[in-house]
Amino acid sequence: MILAHDHVHSLDCEHKLVAHDDHHDYLHDGHLHHVTASGVDNHVLAVDADHPDGCTPEHFCNEHAGDHVHGDNCGHAVIPHGDHVGYLVDGHLHRAHGDHCDYHGRVTV
Figure 1 (cartoon, rainbow, N blue to C red):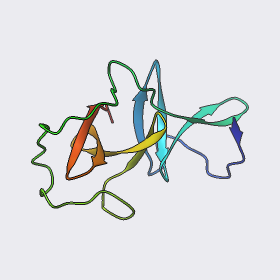
Figure 2: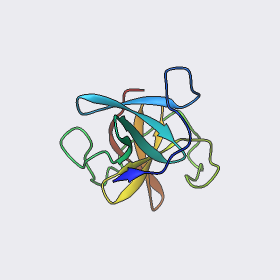
Figure 3: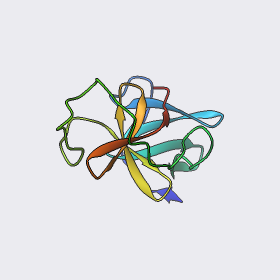
Figure 4: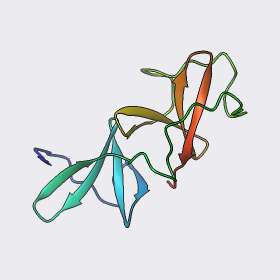
């Protein structure tokens, strides 16, 4: 889907570049924006072997405190992943799940 988008993404803009398949997308307000000749497409990280969608209660991340709650304004960038969103924490995706965070794969920024 081509988005109406007045911001021009470039290497000089403030948005992080995220490696996605064989290209890079710009992380912008919880969306992965892919710039094309005809505009900006919204992309999503697929649920796959590199970015699974399983429960991993054994995952421990020392990047944030155990009582940290992911959500609006938690300080971690939001990345669309499958039918949900993940949070970028120390180069990998977290998904809040009950009393723990699930590990949903590495993300190259």
